[in-house]
Amino acid sequence: MNLIESKSKSERAAILAISVISLLIVMKLIAGVVTGSVGIRADAIHSIMDLSGAVIGLVGIRLAGRPPDSGHPYGHNKIENLAGAVIAVVIFLAAVAIVYEAVKRFFTGAAVEMAGVGIVVTVFAIVINIGISRYALRVAKSEDSVALETTARDLMADVMSSASVLAGLILVSITGVAALDPIAALFVAILIIRTASTAMKKSISGLLDTSLPREELESITRIIEGYGDRIAGWHQLRTRKAGAERFVEFHLLMPGNINVEDAHSFVDELQREIEAVLAPCRVTIHIEPCGDDCGNCSLTCDLDKK
Image (tube, rainbow, N blue to C red):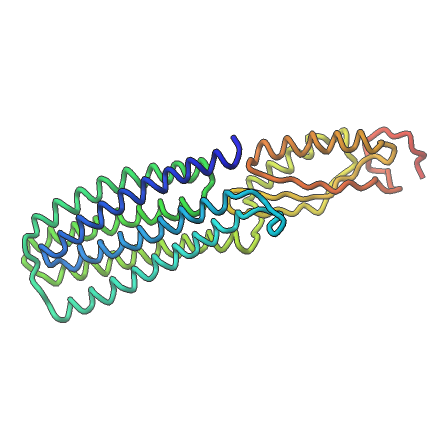
């Protein structure tokens, strides 16, 4: 599967998320007006930010899928990391807005009316969000899309925030204590801030060219050392990730008596194996002749040992 095909799946998942979020926003806004619940309004604000983030994520996914050009020889993959970071900022702003509204309502006080309507709408929103967030997260992981994963996790945070609102509405309807509604909204804000922090950390990691995870580095090492009977050694492994694509570079020591054509053929074979395991991936290998110190080398060369 090539990168373009992979991105098309991410795009479809992002478009579906945008459609569902738009529907939920309309429902929550209507329920917020009817009930006067600051918790539902906070949840609606979260969904509006979800929508903004999903749109940003979709744009990022599409731009990141563009092929390399003269101005961007390494491709446009980091746009997806940047989109993820922007989404995280949007999520955090949603939390700030919710905190402001909740604190204001807590001190001014206002009764929640028709709590039953709010409960029904919130339950429906939870069920829909669970389904779409799980689907989006599954696609994000299979296609390694940072932007879509951020959107999916934001939707899952929306599930938790809606659950908090639901608990608040149920308690208000049972106890009649209206202050429980803004308290639930504040709990929503805490969950949103946590989601924003996680999303930002992952997005910034890609922008700063952080090394690949340990398990992927171990896979690279295992593949290279699997050719131990054909190479004299290797060193200076450098890795990074931009969007979904990985970049791997290292120096490979080859027997001094090997000709250029054979060395090139061998390197192509090694590159293909690494790229197949870590796809999408680009591997760059710098070939060096082995040195004069052959005491620890198991290769049989025609060179004179010094």
